Image (tube, rainbow, N blue to C red; front, top):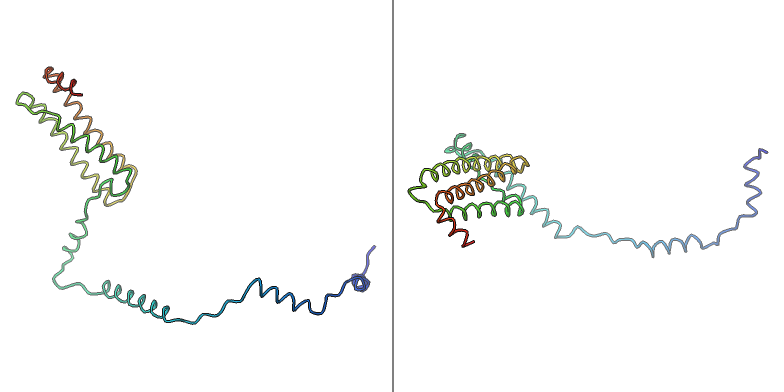
Length: 192
């Protein structure tokens, strides 16, 4: 069964067809037609200009950042400048969050404009305003956290919950005022 491979090739050479003499030349021509060689581009003046612009940009940035501090600046002033970042709101991070924030703020302002302040309701009104001020301070603190830490699901939810709570407080205030003055509540219901 075992046969010598050399013998097989010798016998097989007779059956192998010979390629035409110009086969390699035709193959190379077809290869050149399919994949033309790209011309070598010269290092044009545009590339030199772009390199100079990039080099000047890096030099300017290095000069600004590596420049020694002015004698009048103290480290305390630098720290105060970095802490005075503008407080970001939900709208600064996402248009969807901006819509939610605007909706609640508009509803809160609308409810505040509907509530009538009278001497009889002064005590209730002042209590609710104190609660609203506390919630407003908490909202500002949460907005500061949002500015420092960036977008965080817990902070965003806390801000939205704060807005909801303020709006619910105003609804409760309006309900209590309507209970105290039933004649005004019928006027409000008719206008709705």
